[in-house]
Length: 257
Length: 70
Image (cartoon, rainbow over all chains, first blue to last red; front, top):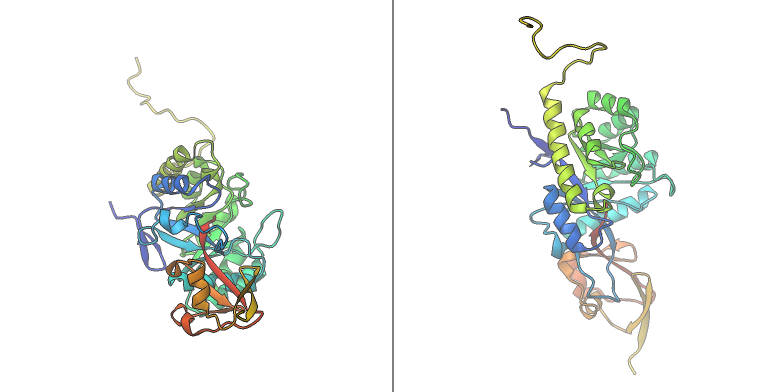
């Protein structure tokens, strides 16, 4: 069997599941869930150091950036200026060039602000960043991001944290057909089967945070997502049967007693 | 008494000694330098040069790191 490679910005990964590190009860829980998920890339946020409480645990003490690829994000940024500032700071922490750009446009639905996202993608690419871009599920915008230099297209399945699963399969299929860039479903997944569906649509990977972190049993859900991503990918590569309107017996029709 | 100046560190006002360097602030607050990025008045600072950066009245310092996020 030919090796099934998952390459982002010339780097080879074996897990197609990317997980977020937010919303866990503790750093320990987060680290264990990541371990169980098999993820090799995790998203992280850039925030102020807590000056008053110096004993607060640090993410880097629990998740080793030498073993797990940190993907700094711009969560909480509502315009290009804030996003650029955040990612330039992230790069300064330790040379991170692979980043996730996420510019939000509305506090209630958390949909991406695509004009600002596009502008930011252009600037960051020129500055040498490798930009994985959170976007809406619009094939036209996905194309423009690709032309602007994005290194991965990351359309939402549904609003961030909503758990609704993939709302617009058709658009995801169209984006899949039009791009050779890594296509990663980001945001809105609720359960493991949503990830399997994303993979069966031909996506290269999925990014999950809330569905694991806020599940009643996050460790079990981390494993479930791991398995679902593998199953979905294998299913996609296996070439599914055609759907038919009527039945087709599985046992031979001849030799019936 | 030593002369003091007022700075803003991560959104909070602080009175510090006149002639303090950015390095003094980092040291005093036990900041793990390899795990943070520093901005002085919205400009990113080269962490290697913080010993030679003297702080002025009303300087705004932001020190950030990575935390859990989606």
